[in-house]
Image 1: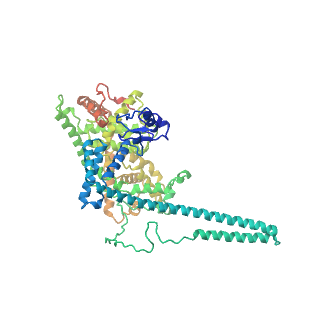
Image 2: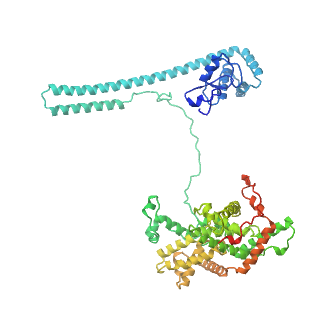
Image 3: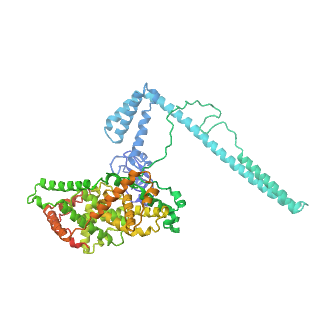
Length: 311
Length: 319
């Protein structure tokens, strides 16, 4: 975010990273301070494009590119009017045409192409489909409400659980404290020797611990998965299509070296090759080097291509 | 490994005639190129013949060997072997009339250091050219860098070269382990080494796999010491049942020994006459300005003034 400076005061953005940028309807940014400055003097024109502005038109910038913010605003407004849903259309083709229309309008308004005509079109559409728009608005708001209710419920559930946990912890702490206090009291009053009392106390503390453990492990029985599916509900799935193919048969890699056989790396020591190679120093073995590697390489090179005769 | 390397697939030929053919073709290609470009003032005799090219090639190869042996820090044998192989491969498809062997030989050595992971900085590398001033060394370095890409391209980007040094070590280890009849294989090492050094400056590397060259080296030095290693070949290398392979092996070894015997260092007078001819050709055809632009054209490196007026590097400048 620091690479964008406020176009008016230029420096303040870098010096003050907590400063927010505001965007207006013409798509240009201004930092908070500059917005204040601009409207203190009473003049309401954008610095870069000189369009008349109102203070209320400034919104906090959410995206890095102010043009995106501008488009998002325009889109919201357009979609308030063009709010038909997919089941309002007889077929997919008509729905797609409608969507394309919407995109055209948004694009035109964002880039100031043919703005007059576009606005006229919007007004016309609005007039024609007034009641449809109204109905759809209502439907949309109802859906939103449902969603919000669900969210609220979830939040409440979380809160409840948190509180329960806290209470539980408190109870456990109290129980432990009571136990300690009981021990002290007994030590004071009772006639039994201290060792026996301590042993009793230990037994009691152990029992308390196990109790707490058990409570932690005891899971509240639910009948709902987190995705909302009830337990023991049979969900019908389509059978997975079976693909029959030829079974893979492993064939070991065979490299033609055109020469005598080279013994395996691991056999070199046993066969006595390593006696004739310089031994590996401790520094070399630290890196994973063994003298067998160099020996194997030399012998491989010696035998590779020995029986190649190009005549 | 050699058996699935590009060397085994693309850079081993059947016999010396095939190799000679390729060199003649390169020679002819250059002649035709110059004749077609229609430059005046040349006759057939101003071109170099194959045997003259050969003389100079061997001379510069020997010079490269000396340069590498005098190199500081000490250059490992495999680097030297790779450099000479690059030199040999390059002039299999290109004529020395077109690219002067002086530059190509330094470029080969430079590239070989890089490929074989023998780390020398470029300044250190040209620092080994003791006859040059530091400014001269800079110029040489620039030339090397210009020709590097061309060299890689002419090597068909096959940069890994399998030298016979490690196979020889492997064979010695195998001898010590599985062939107790031979008491002291280490005694064979010295003359086998000499054999291998001799083999690198012949065409043996282009005809035989490095393991065969190493085997021939060991067997030759053994026979020179009067030891017989027949049973090694039969028992340990498993050629007892396979008489055909054994026969072919002996034949290859015989051919290799002949090739090595045929090598001779060119005489100084011959070298000098051929050199003069080469210098004349290079000066005449002024292809040096074209050479400069090759390689780094994409970088816009073309903006170098043609340095025709300067001598690239005189021969005495090197060792």
